[in-house]
Image 1: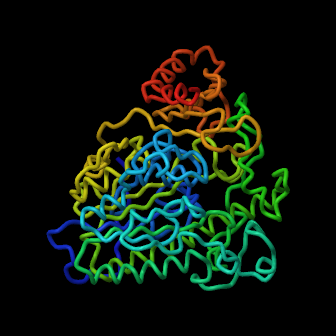
Image 2: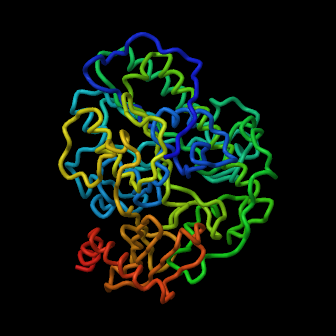
Image 3: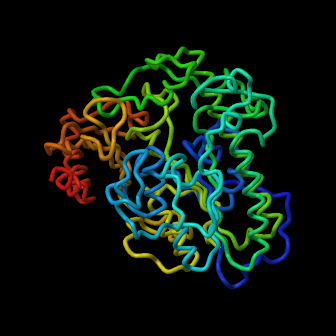
Length: 486
């Protein structure tokens, strides 16, 4: 098993924390649109010293997968511990309470267990009704909905623009606190101090929006990178023999005013966007570092379990795709780092196939809380103590498509169900209106890690296809297909 190098921290832990024998605090950190572009995941470009340091004292799950690669469904799934077909959240507007009015969310479980549960930043979806769930928190959440242009942008060109989407990137000579995430970071540090002084254990959820578009970060983080040294993306087109369902654009990047509406970005724009993404990753890493440093200064480390997770991955031109909203590896694979006080296998890199739906039962078990009924994930606590143990044979993700158009409503007309197994990615596109499988994909990660060749028509893979089809059926996805047609 690989191990991270030990990192010596400058800060010295203070006196005993507030919890004593009562239990563990939880510092729950969500990062929007973060693919595993981190040093601790082997990314040789990324400058992420703070998350790398956290990883050195925790567990890095290198094969963690979201359940649907777009914000609202992914977050609803993690926070309820249920798959999208159970939450009935497949798009950006639905609220899980519509289908599950009495469900106990992750923060709600801690609230009912005597914790103070506080949310700062984007934890649920970042806009509309889906961004709020009052029963989950002991106090109203803060900065969960932010649309002010002066917090999204800094340059006059963008401040004088119109609409939510102006330029797709911005490098400005401003302080860290200028943008939304800097404001969230400062408030989170304040709340951490308040919670540390209290008598109850706490569940503090902090949600950072970067590296979500637009790629706006203070100039100092752009300066960490030589744009020409960031690996370029060769324009090789979409995966060979992939169905149109698989590669349809979500039209997110194309909505910015400096990006062609047809998505035909130039080579210079590709370099700029990739540079901007990494700058935003380093910006968020620094903000998280400040929060973790404050946790250490307050003497909370030995009594606080820290989890950092990305809600889904992100394409930066690979496979001719941008952003997320598909079933491929780059959109479904996410960073997941857990550092738990007293874990027996700290500093480990875990290669087990895990899912974000597993986070809920993991935190509940580690903190010795009652396990709510109906959770569909599996606690990762055994892996925190032995990262090499045998685990699951697959990770399940899904993404819907409308029959026409770039964005779906509800469950759409066709649902793509994806299994990531040890060697393969297998996808079935199921017709929710008429029934049956419309298209199939199979990618061999041993020979095609970039998922550029669909092997569905390869006769040598017939047995592999049958085995994966049977495995997918055991996950119960056919039940929803039949239900949707009623």
